[in-house]
Amino acid sequence: MYSPLLLPVFIHIAWTGVLYVVLTIVRAPSVWEIGIHKDGVNPWADIEPRISANLSNQFEWPLFFHMVCVILISNAALYSSTYLWLAWVFVFGRILHSLVHILTSNVRLRGLVFTINFLAVICMWVSVIVN
Image (cartoon, rainbow, N blue to C red; front, top):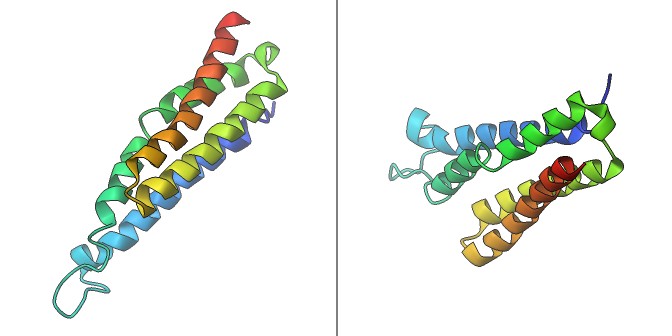
């Protein structure tokens, strides 16, 4: 039985895979000396720690998103389109959070974007518990 929730779950998993690929690419100069500057410096040295930290973040709060989605997928009686909407808010919020985290050093903006993800998952859980 197909659940519409599988697509946002898959997109988040795919996004995490993209982050692994990007991290591998930015580490290549240090690890494989591919693309290293003539002075021996990795041109991505400044951004690599942010990508690494963001990748680690994909295994923290998103765990609760995946858990609630498993509950909803396994119990179709609980499902409503509101969950799908909240799941997409979470996924797009996660991608936006990654971009803010990796491309800027604006912690305040990153916190605001994280709040989108946080609230989407909280709303999903509260709705599951109430129903």
